[in-house]
Every structure is written in structure tokens, then in C-alpha cells.
Image (cartoon, rainbow, N blue to C red; front, top):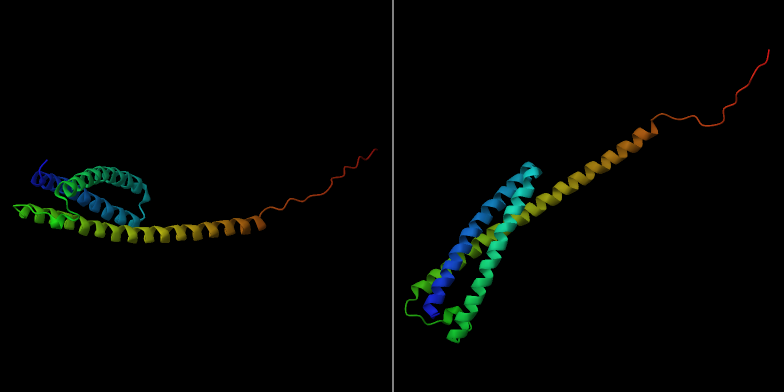
Length: 159
């Protein structure tokens, strides 16, 4: 593959990743709304969808790194910015795509961090509620029926 072809292939991979990253952002926003509304029954479905998209992104990333390394090796460069191509517009386009991916990834990270904090708060709330229930059970036991223990003696009276 020539350098120009490699750059075009990297662009296609980046466009695919950008599409998946946008889907991931949408799912992450939905996940955040679900946590806010405490509709945890829907959470499992969202997480499975996110995991599927992340696997597909990983596949694209592996391919991107392979081709990127090949491009650097073939061109004897250490950074893609040092690459000398006739039409630099493709290189600029690739950099723009990578920049967009980075921006969306940062948004996802912020939302995920906020969601993790909300989840932590929800868990603390549940933990406190469980403590109250356990305490209530102890109190209820204290006021429950008391069994009178001891021995029973039967006396037979003969007439």
C-alpha cells in the first residue's frame, strides 16, 4: 500500500470509529438519565449495548494502529505530522477526524464520571436504608411475643 492509500484507509477507519463513538455518547447520555431517574431495570440493556460498541471500537483501533505503524515504518517517520504527501488535505482531514473522536471521548468520560458518582450516591442511600431496616427488625424483635419458658407441672388429683 502506498502512503496516500494508507492515509485514506486510516480516514475510513476513523470515520467508522467516529460513528461508533457518537453511538456510544448517545448510550452514555441515556445511561446517565436512567441513573438520574433510578430506573435501574433498563441499565443492564444499555451496558450490554455499550460493551458491544466498545468491542467494535477496539477492533477498529487495532486495525488503525497496525496501519498507522506501517505508514510510519514505510515513510521512516516517528510522527504522522512529519509525513510528506502531495495532497496534505487528506492528512488534515485525518487529523480533524481524530480530533473529533478525542473530543467526543472526553465528553463520554465526563458523563461516565458523573454517572459513577451518582451510582456511588445511590449505593450509599441503599446501604443506609438497609441499616434502618435491620435496626427496625431488632426493635420489632424486642417488642415481639415473649415465650414464657420454664417447667410445666401437672398435678393429678385422685378422688
